[in-house]
View 1 (tube, rainbow, N blue to C red):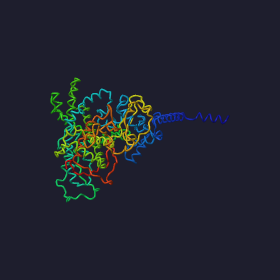
View 2 (cartoon, rainbow, N blue to C red; view 1 turned 90 degrees about the vertical axis):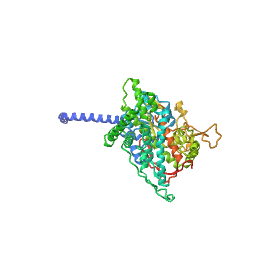
View 3 (cartoon, rainbow, N blue to C red; view 1 turned 135 degrees about the vertical axis):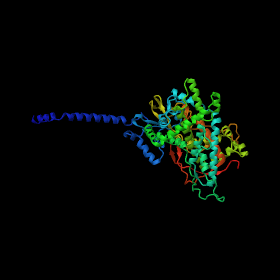
View 4 (spheres, rainbow, N blue to C red; view 1 turned 30 degrees about the horizontal axis):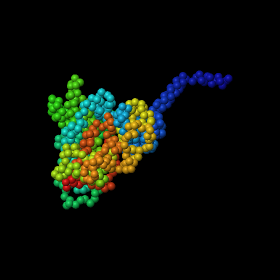
Length: 597
């Protein structure tokens, strides 16, 4: 009794503050456990995932960081997960917990089906809108397909990809600026005298000239390439007719700094890369926009827009028919469309609306980066694959035989209107192997399935263009799980999928008996997978412009030059991730060799 009484007395003398503190600590512990459970990754049912990701607050992010340190190409990590799990569909945890898991899809048939036939179930994913939203929030990428705003933006830009506008307005501008690149490289080829030089900046600036001319108009004096030409020495060094014996010695040309407006555009474009690499792109890009160089770039960009809009409005006729005919740039046409849409809506036109500024900047960024990166890869592949290059040059001599006979350049009209199947095959193969956009995302609008796996509404599906079924045999799939449309999609033969081979896109013409006629083969763009432009209603808006740019540039370059082999010591296929995936090392050896010689 004595011990019990003593214990009771001690218990009664425990301060109330102790019990209060203990209760609070218990509640905090329970709250912490619940919070921990809430923020830890939670997988979707049945879809393979990395088990270690479930035990880490940041899911797969540490694995991506480690991969990037070892390999230097973050986007290939996603491809590696499909290979690791031997599954065409996996789930990953690369975003903060409130996003949930993301699905990675590598099967090209299912990707094609989602793009082209299941667009009512899948719309443009938030990944692209987060990446671009920091600088162009009021642009097509950020809008849902069925929204009124999307329809308005499509109406605003409706004419820009019509053949009539492309051929009469854009083609002459692309041709003129491409010829400046030809002139620059003729001079550089003479100066370098067979030695390699770095070409990345030349292609970067030529592509910028082209898209700025198509967007706003660009005089010769404003051209980045013209400034490069003027910076070259007036007299070519004399080598007594001898070629340098060491083809590994790089001839360095001085890069000419871009003017403030061109630099502002490229700086803003470069900032978008954060949106693809950061787990918190919106917050990350907001922070970047507070820094002086991006604040300054935005100010310069807005000044450029105001000036170009003012110039365009001054030359716009009041008559609608005349306004259409007189349009010389994409901006001219867009401002006319704004005037027309305002009249229909019974409102005053807003020529300085955010949607005009954002759509024009998007037009420039998308048109510049994809062409620049794709052409850079194409030049490297054709230099390293001499037989396809020789076949291409021979093909061009047949297609443009009149230009060869007259010892002149093919005209813009001849280039864009010609039937040139091997040329088309080369361009398509360059697009296929360069994979400048290895990932395109879609977001599930409804609860649905992919290959039998449940995909909840709101799930981001990342569709890869660089994994199994594109460059290596596809991972086995139960064919009964496919949709009827998916089963119809053609694929490549398992052999040589990773080889640069333009012939894969060609078929023998039924009307041909063989021989050397340029039309003895037929180009078939559906022979196998190539997803550089996505597909369906949410495919790349500027696809037609990109193809026309590539056609004009490839024709003029290989009509005038032969690309010589590069020493293996200088050739690297390392990839550098920006908005697009660029070659990290760009060396070229040129010989001036017009096809009439």
